[in-house]
Image (cartoon, rainbow, N blue to C red):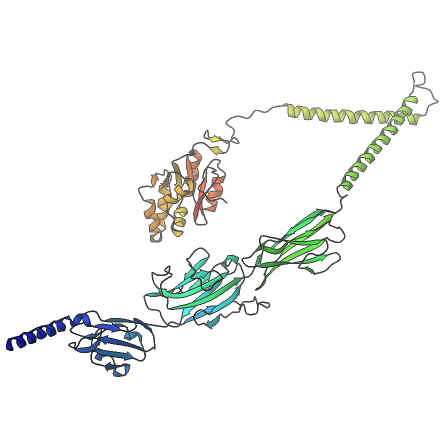
Length: 597
């Protein structure tokens, strides 16, 4: 019996020892993994009988003040409770030094409050929206998911700020999203472009350089973890919802419309809008003053195209005494009226309007023919009377005829003869003048020699690879706009380009000093061919003009207005310059890469 009891006691002792060594796997925790700031949380530690319970948080628990927490022990379990969670309470909690290698991780979420700053009227009073911007911005404190609506005038500058009340941690940033009309839509991440820019230390300012009707929508301002802006499953700390309503825009123009009486007239109001819009017509005619049309009435018919109500006004059987006048259209949406309008000046002509000029021409022809006919009849009668009263040989010295009448006839005959001979002499001189052909010598200074490379104004010597002479200011402007010279030349001409730099251009850059040392370094690139100059001085304009006059194989790259004016006088020489931060070229239709102007 003694050996049997000893064997039983030995087995129990071994089991207890093994249980102590496996206590490491018997420690587990219950509690939240994250908690909002100022909230209470409790972490429970369950362990074996042999574990030595002693709490710590990324270091000894005694580092915390006693008022921040309290412990509850219950044998194999222990609780630690903190009434007010602070950011300093985030970390790894462990209840045993001996049998716990992992612990429990807790994150305290800091509630970030956002302040929305905008400078636009609200959508609350839809019928009376004040479009006059106040000098000071409107500041509104909004809670999460509260939708704020504002009205914006189109084609103006507008900025929206979503400002955190405190500095954000380094791992957080503000991201902007545009969603559909549903505020629960996560939205599409907004990126910077030529119209939109994102500014501020935390990207908290969204600036519209030019607002267009397509900018209407709901914008989300979220504080989110950096690098997870496009992850829809990522949790964000705070959010604001701002709805932007852009007023409709009517193309501001004045048009003259001319129609024939009893024909139809169609007036189309051009409206740009991304929301439901209705057009209102205001008519000032000969019998009506400031009459408003919102629906069809009589001969005035309103129709719709392009999802805009009443934007086409049709006049059936136009009347010259009623319908002549001005027609003005304005657009109206739920948010208010468009800040611009379109005016048509309607002029109506009579259906016989084309007949009156024809009748006038016919009357002029008839009157002219009548005058000529009467004149010819009178002249024939006078000549006949003169022929009847001429003196014969037998009556030449007769005293019966009056001396006055004979003297008058002789004077008239002399006057007519002199007039006819004078006109004939003038015509003969004119004919002799034009019949003489004066030959001009080929050495005449007035003759400008034409290059054999030109076919009319087309330069046949231009072709890839293109040889381009570069002026000083072309290099400086390329550096200013951050344009790679060779790459942008190839993008403009769609072919290989060889830039050429003369000694005088390099001399000008050297005289400009240290400020232009980058330009000097660029033109000394081995890819730039250098041309030696034989003239004195460093003035490059005369040198470039002389070279392109002698050699038609060059394209001149310059931004100098005076130099371009001189080059335009030389036929067949294209000019490359910078426009809208791109290279473009004139007088060269083969440059398919150049932007169309």
